[in-house]
Image (cartoon, rainbow, N blue to C red; front, side, top):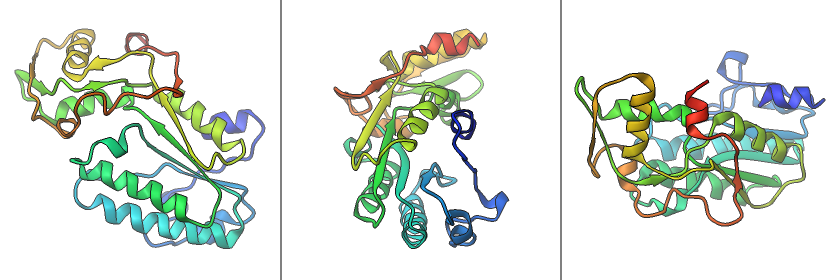
Length: 229
């Protein structure tokens, strides 16, 4: 996203613990946000478990306090399509908490909700796999290329605050177990995919909870196009 914004003539500066900015402690935030017009928060916790609500509460409190003090005019976060429709997932509840903190904060805001990244599919498969099989639920999802999400976040960041939410999703809907089969075939991996509706993080989702609703931005890159790169 920084490369996209820079190419468009904006001065975009990435920050993380490697540049001396720590959202969990607040260290370096005041200096990083000085004279900034927009702040974009793309951080996530190391795990998707019970620690995630505290992570988002602390990091958002620190960020919004510093952004308000610095006079930042627009705060943007990246969230998840369907975050409010999967109450059985502590991580999804934590993302809703992050959104609510932003909405209630002192800085005009925008929320971009994306579906699951193409780049994340193989990680999801690794959680419930062994040498012979990959167990995946048959939950529906509408994955999207991270590059397409980066462009959408850049567009929103360079515009006026939405004071609302924009969804972005890929052009195709898959059952996750079928997505696993497509992925394994493309990688020449001969393991079998076993449909297991209790397997992994996405077992908590059901129906069309992870599918974008009317009004979403539909990205152009298909999963098979992405796999072929």
